[in-house]
Image (tube, rainbow, N blue to C red; front, side):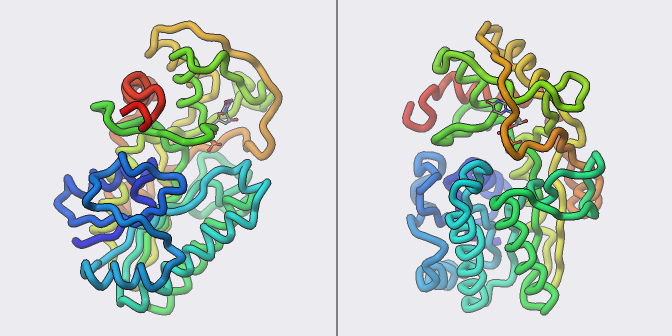
Length: 328
Ligand code: UDP
């Protein structure tokens, strides 16, 4: 298929660009590079521009006869969303609506949307199935859920088909070490731990050791970024107009912060300082996916199931790119 990937220079977006190319699709990328990296993707695919720019998007969609959009362009930091909710509604919701407007004008009828388990808020049950109530507790999760509602209503009216893929914790890197995670500022656990192992940070902090979990630290479902990319390709290939797919993407197994740090110590073979710190505001104690619906609807199963294997891929990236894409 001929597809446009918004936010395709970002972390999950860029891995998906390669997965799409490997599956034989024709890919164009729209990214404003506010958070993404031009170096992450082949330069001939990239248009530097913004999803708010409806005439630009319509022109791109028509010129390349695009059949579907994979929409990753968004802000994704919970803490920042609490500080600056306006940015999140502006980019994630209003930007998304502008993209929908362009899509309808250009008669493009399918969208695969990068959603998040943050739409569930603090879940009452674990693992979390797609039927769990959506009750996001921060502007990031709310902005993503609000856009899911818009998609649902458009699908219901028969104008589009969409898949909203609710990721748990995206992690890891391309196994050859050429592509990986590079955020500024970095807030995610695995990159922070590996940067500490490289000596780029003096210590790593555990945010909260008094949670009601076996070792007192938060539990998350870490899913490899290439597995996420593969799920997007599958969603794209299965989707038809009028359809609404809402699906969790996780491995169905949780690891605690201490377990992740232990896996990083084992994989890197390095010693580094670990400090116990206060809880980070807004962190639910346990977020683990019930992943069976993804198998049913997308035929998707993660290939990476062990945290050490995921960390190994991330370690190859961080070791060869200690300054991220600036290392090249
Ligand atoms: N975390 C931590 N220290 C850090 C960064 C994260 O203990 O320096 C914890 C965080 O509180 C959460 C888990 O690691 O329980 C995963 O956090 P991350 O920011 O990677 O992803 P999130 O779950 O927020 O999407």
